[in-house]
Amino acid sequence: MLSRFAIGRLTRAALPALLFVSVSAHAALFDDEEARKRIEATNQRLAQIQKQFDDRIAALESQLKSQGLIELFNQVELLKAEAARLRGQIEVLTYELAEAQKRQRDLYVDLDSRMRRMETAPVAAPPVAGAPGQAVPAPAPLSTTATPAGAAPPPTFGPQPPVPAPTAGPTTIIVPGRTVPVPVPGDAGAEQRAYDAALDLFKSGNYGGAIASFAAFVKAYPRSPLAPSAQYWLGNAQFAQKDFRGAIASQRQLLATYPDSQKVPDALLNIATSQFELGDGAASRRTLEDLIARFPQSDAATKARQRLAIR
Image (cartoon, rainbow, N blue to C red; front, side, top):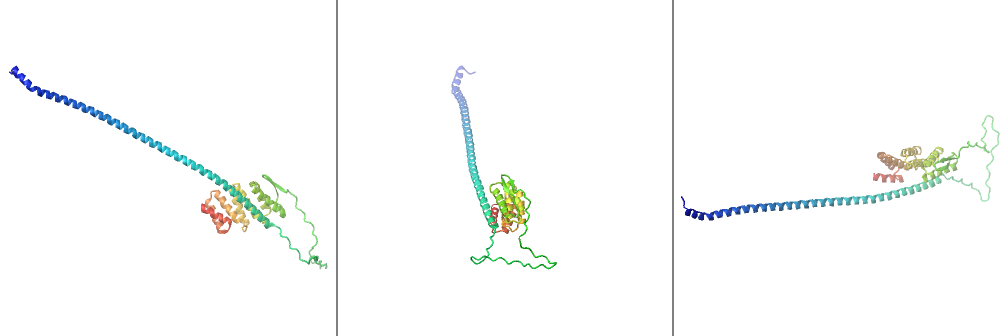
């Protein structure tokens, strides 16, 4: 059995070892706690960095979206401004085209009227030649020899009995907006007046009245030099009223009745335009090609080539 002295010596010998073990254990405990704190702090720092990164990404995405919308808005505004500018140009060009067509129509109508007056002007009879100051001798009297029995009597050159006048009728007709003279067959002056009155209706834009007047003229004077022009302007007036089928029928009537008229190329051009307005582009192209082939040197053929070039 160990004495108290031996136990004391043993205790004094083991005390440093016990103290070292205790300090080591305490140091180990301290290192673990510090490591946990550092790990926790690092995790918090990483979380903060991650949050900051996410926030910056979100801000960048929002900025990019805002810039895209602004750019799109700017492009839309530019397109609106361009559309408004083009619309204004179209309106100006439409007005100028309408005015040019009106001037061209007026000039054409005026030229046509002058040409028709020249064509229908009466030709003066040549004067009988004779010596200055000398009366022209009268024709010799006819023979008064008796007519043999059974033979026909000679023609009489004396004054003839007057031809009975036709039954009187209305001298004017009322068309929308105006009263015009009724065409009277056999009266050259009435013929010209009736044509001029119908043409004046067309010039003034009274297309309904022009249609009625030109139709009456063609019916009253089918053999008149003015009849082809009247038939052409009848179809033109129908076209102006957007009666494209009626215009085609009237111009084809001109082609059939007056195939040698100078109005035939213009009638073909009017037919092609009416077909195009009806949506029959193929028929319109065929008519234009026929016009160019038949009348290559005409003004109507020049217009036909221009139209074919842009279709």
